[in-house]
Image 1 (tube, rainbow, N blue to C red):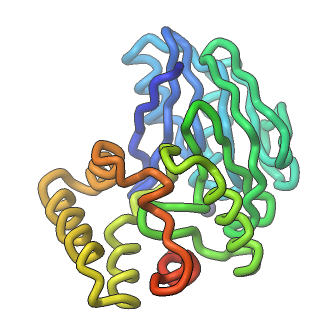
Image 2: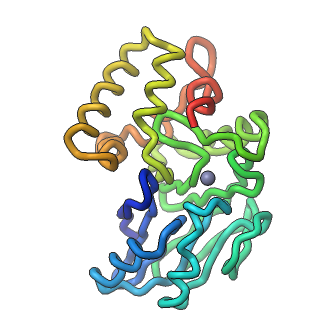
Length: 238
Ligand SMILES: [Zn+2]
């Protein structure tokens, strides 16, 4: 099993690094520099790059990484992204033996039309489709497409660990509270996240989520009567 660590990038991006032994795979490297720094510091060789969608803050670092590492580059076949060597569609599988990675590819159109997510070993790398407290903004797809994509993610096991690509937790919870101001659980979660951010800077909130199990699908997902739907709770925020 690989170990997952985060590499902060830009203002609020997460680049996820999956390592086994001295070999690494990165997910959505929008910037090469912070990834190269970690690889060098930890003595890791880069085996593969996984891309979820075409936005520059998710794939802008591919060329810089390939200049120094000969890695396979997996990404959505339906989007134009330079450097992809292994184009993927929903239903495909990804095997990266050196990192012990076996992922299913899930098509999740909405944020962009060709957006894909990677699921395996109890982990979901969902790019800009699902965040702590919300979902991605609709740049290319329709609300109906996003709802279908989120339903596909909701069908995964409840204990799935979700690795999203931005720290939007506080803004998403603020929006959710605007929709449902009397929700005490939301209120207390918002206060916890605000306190964590005040203590630890902009990248602390999602670590708390993982540590407390709040980043699992069962905690992220609320649908049905009496609650706010994913569209209501999230899509308006980002
Ligand atoms: Zn994006």
